[in-house]
Image 1: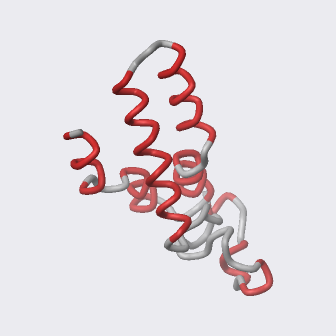
Image 2 (image 1 turned 60 degrees about the vertical axis):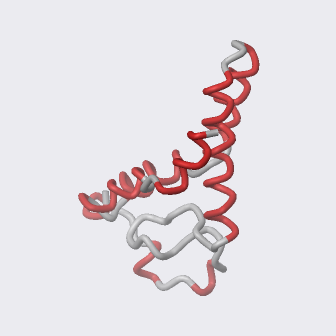
Length: 104
């Protein structure tokens, strides 16, 4: 249970991508960590290989993603960190939807 108590105090390391760039690469890194596919795959592997630690990590990861969604932090668009898939596309400013080599 120690790992379950320590996990919430750890920073979200995928945010470090936004320190270097605010474009496609940063959004892709953040989005790859904040979708349900990878933690579900880890949970399935933990079940197949009977690995309790991997199972706990998968549950923590799923809880983290779910908590982010509940607080309104969704998958990111290239261009600006604050615009997410949870917002209406009609309310997004044009700057949030910019793409191209200067944003990657």
